[in-house]
Length: 319
Image 1 (cartoon, rainbow, N blue to C red):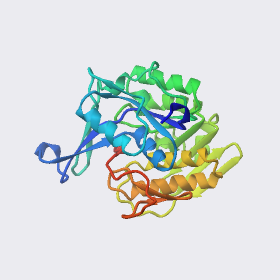
Image 2: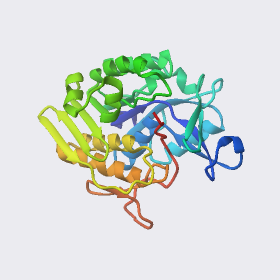
Image 3: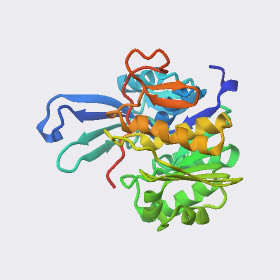
Image 4: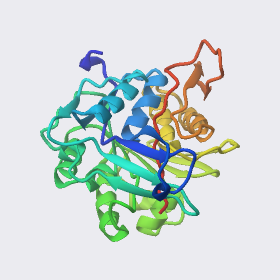
């Protein structure tokens, strides 16, 4: 893929996820499933399936786990030309510990991706997609986010993760970063945790500068604040299998609609439909079938499907 043709550059860490299978506490040992997990790369995988020319920018260890991550993301049609391999630092890993309450254990300190920084090469694209996870990883990662928000048109998913930093630490930083982005995605629930806002209008009052602000309210729907006004689109009814990656899928669907100049209600609906496919999937990035602007989960034998069946997960942490 020619870098001059890129529409979205998704920047951030992706790790390997290890989950006991069948589900049981890690202390018991036994068989496990190895998956690939990362918010920004998940967005890239959905964008590629929706026909958007997307690249994923990151760093991986020059190790078998890094090869797994890169191959899995390649398989979705995402450009990985700008992924750097590091012989000295490993690919990050985290473990899911099932039980009465599922816990997550991270082994990402000193990972290759933690060395992302202001000198990292991010190719020209119409939009650079970032999340609030990256600035929590290291000082250099925070400097990269700052550089991109200063020099590029960015979309920013707040993506507050309590396992990375406290609310007191994250709230002012994420507020400042989000208010500098052109397009912002935030869940009403995380906005309440971070800033005490109660309604989408409250969030807009707190973040007046983005050209577009999309406030997601779970099964209720999504509200967008944009140059021509405010639009609400109710969420479709979905039988939820697992709520993994739905927020990233929503961001991808909305961005795909924006890049194709769809009317605002259709952008929101495409976000909902892409998220619905994620909600109906057990842990993996759903393989989408697209007809026009319609998006649904692939059915066997559907020749209109895009991408490949595979496992790329993003674990929403228990807050």
